[in-house]
Image (cartoon, rainbow over the protein chains, first blue to last red):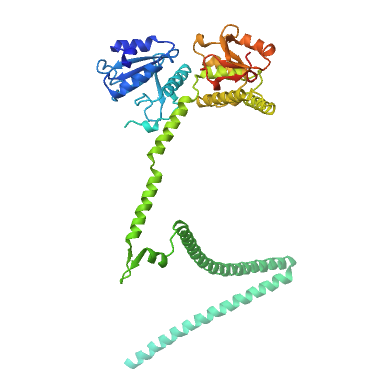
Length: 143
Length: 340
């Protein structure tokens, strides 16, 4: 249900345009599949916070079965992946899992996700490429 | 005829022997004569000139020096021999000392290892009485535990595991933690900074000084037994939460921030004009009179609240920020804040 509330990116061109044209806010793209359990849970959370973070973040969904252009580039091998972009630049975040390029685990709390997005946005505005997450997710390491 | 030849040969031999003897004698005589000649020459020279005596003395001195040098050389030889003997002794001594040092080091190492072993290994003393209580020794000296002992061991293990693994308690703690996190305050950075600015009375007051000021207000309210005590405490709690939130988000020196630094931080962190606060236009505050807590008045601007705080409220009002939900803990006494 949440996947209907968030905008879908149907093609690779749409993904590129979403990243390039947004000049003020953080672009958050969830790569995954509609029917995947983790994606469904994460979509619910993202849709619930979209209104609260609309001033500094915009959230999109992208189905990797429909759009396979970025699978190799971003190593989209996990069932659910959230990536962050600002001014056509990929933002990295140290979650404590060893993978700084993406968020490939489920975040349970809304406020945690808001804080993560805020931290990444603040770092991006200061021209940082890597920021440290306000929460440690060492226990959610994906093997 | 033949006989006459033999005597001739013997004569020749005798003659040759005589010649040899003569030569020897002549040599000896020659030598003696040379010696005598030398003596005579020396005497003559001594008698004739005084300078020659000096020359002789110099010669004597030279000869003496030669003798001295020879004796010195001999002495040097002796000294060298003595030194060699000393060197051989020293070497021997060094060998002995070397051995002693090695042995001492070995003893020292052994001592250290023994002490380490003693420190590291804690061996329980052998106690027959305890073992007899819990078991039996057979004929060969082997120890056999009784069944009761094994059962006791199992019970001990189960108790230990039960202490470690208590799922209900773990679940309860997790629920409590989740409830706390849900009920706690959550602010964006610019929101937290805006609220923090209102707790700083003047430009020079730091956050730490503001906490001290609120503590004084709390003590005054306690002494006067005033209704405002609860709301002053709410102010202290809000300020503490703001400090914790900002520290968590990277503002490590927030206690030293004054009003100017906070304003600079707000300008740095603000990303949208809609969230900018204008003192004369933006309506932020609602208030209630302490005597009439059921009547809500709002919303008003910073300018209005500041003017009324100085003239109209007389510290009889509690205030709430517009974005805060209408709960009791979000109402703060007006004396805790400075609106402009």
